[in-house]
Length: 276
Image (cartoon, rainbow, N blue to C red; front, side, top):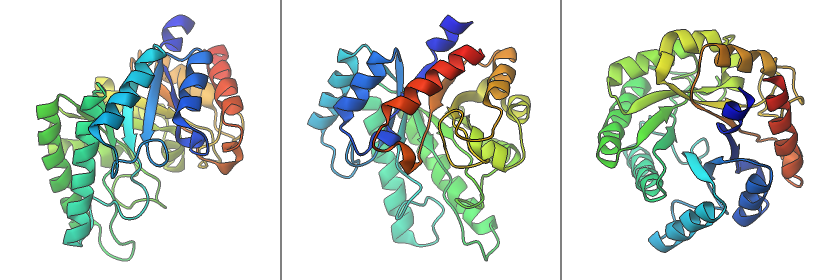
């Protein structure tokens, strides 16, 4: 099991943003990762600025280290990206941003793009924002089909969104989209914050669950393994016992890891393999 699991672990570069992309890729290869989840944000890869030449260079850098892309994850939880925005300019900009991300993922030979639904005003009914998000995601799914890319739709925490924060809301959106290009992603922090377990996701999505963000927390925080209070070993055991076949990606966000990003990545990989 450990060897199979090892091949499905992915390093993520979001907590390396104070270091070069080269440093991240070198560390990922040296630590034994075969897969990466590429966070597309400054200074590693800005979708607003990236040229075809830069994308080709990034693809070569990844391939040169015998790494492959598990998921392409553009930065999308900060201003001004919001697919559900009521403001036409912001909504249009957000869709164009994800369309660039989709084409960038395809050019990097990555077949999975992480997306979120955005958010509506916390002091207003969520129904209108839900419909706007659904329409935008539907149009993006149509483009994804043409590119051969799957959209991984991720729930967020209640502080980040009022649209998709639970497995039930994710299942509802996927049912309304009714697109084979849309699959589920499980973020262990968002799951725990919603009072859920992996069993809830496994029961609702089965093989449509394609990706897991492994992060500790209290229950949130996106901390490295062991720096929070979540029963991560139990979560992984539940997923593996259910024959989950997707990748596990380590997503750490806390500034505690910015200056020494390798240590938490190395210790989390070791802890997960030991737990399995």
